[in-house]
Image (tube, rainbow, N blue to C red; front, side):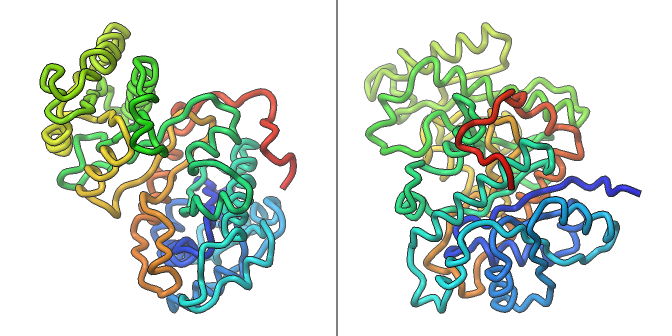
Length: 380
């Protein structure tokens, strides 16, 4: 009998950060194995070090191909505590970088390891060998030192998938206080990894309209997958204090944001705004809106993480594959001490599995491009 659980690939991210230890912690719990068939993509020796660090007695099984994983999944169907499978990807020299915390620094090998694992996972997902990927955090400086000049996962994934636009959404699943309504609460960002001074030049009517459409599309499909049949309620945040006070504190609300909202409304989207974010987020947390469109990174991140930092899941919208992630960084200041909070990794895995099992993955993602993007390897 074939196993119907979703096949989830988990990238190790930058191994010098908290990724390995939070992966081991999450995959040591029954809930993760009950929800999905997992495959870590990275280096098994690093996972073994992480398991010893956090005192988890679980077998790490290195494999060299997706076919090996599929054979093991068939032979261990319905077992509650299978070993952690690790597809060996990347330069083994990174295994020597992991040492006592005092010796760990941001390293180009860590950036390359994060890149290699993401490329491999993306290709497996594009080939339908995996149903979704969950990413542990990478360090942007390490990525740059390794020769990959991408601001973060979101932009790199768009490049690897060959899509012109994507957007980051931080998402709180439904069911807990201040997690929005029956579909949960999402915050989608118009601009993302850029200097604050550059936000103003990147905000356009078109970029805001596009982000509103991505948010609306996600929640329409999520509503269908959850059999709610609700029309998503979208709220768009203002940029300036007090919504600009009719131009006194800036005119972007009148000249850019409001026209985008009007065009979105004309396209049949239930959207309001621009609204001052200090009061908007409280209303959204109580379920008045399903999604908030934020103008820049910290406007959305700070507000949502204050609601529930370690329940928040990062979902990339606009890709041909399903990707979730933890909503925090590499945590180099606490990495390899065994104290990292790992609940966010569990939540990212569970949300990915739920979206796949609910049928949402097929409708949340763009159709796959017919040709491979040149940035993606042909074989794993």
